[in-house]
Length: 188
Image 1 (cartoon, rainbow, N blue to C red):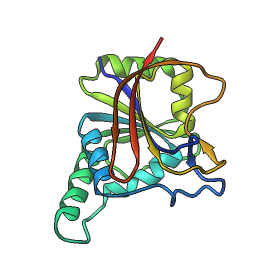
Image 2 (image 1 turned 60 degrees about the vertical axis):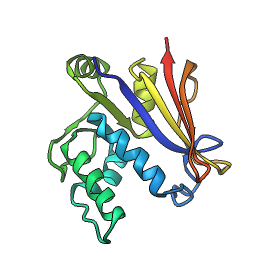
Image 3 (image 1 turned 180 degrees about the vertical axis):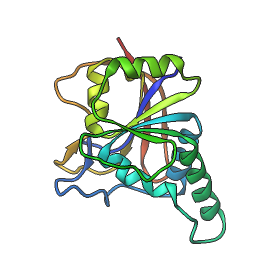
Image 4 (image 1 turned 120 degrees about the vertical axis):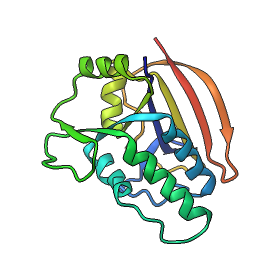
């Protein structure tokens, strides 16, 4: 049975966007990109909310514009993303522009349970609202919280409110940039 993993970059005070909806505060370097590539390597199905899909669909046609290791890393991540099955949860998205992708009009926890049971590789969930729904339904198995060394003071929360879960710390890793990866198992 597959695990459903919510992995997200967030500020120290728990936000994924600042109060203006910007992400430009988030650290993006080679080491963090390598984390995301390794993470994507273990995933065969990505569950996305509409906005997360719209930001990730870039990887469907991404081409390395530079040479060297960055170009190779970009190509590798794009290849892994393209190979993954994508399910987008949206009431408004009419069409998708990536292969191996379909749209579900509404969140159905039973369908996700069946996907987890039938999948041999892990699944990821992206988008705070969708991840919150899955957490409320008890479907998320693990969290990778990549905490940037910044306090935003407001914005879009990474984790749902009015939800309490105990967590088991599986691993912690400090990146050279100051980002800390906190890897937890959700306890029921």
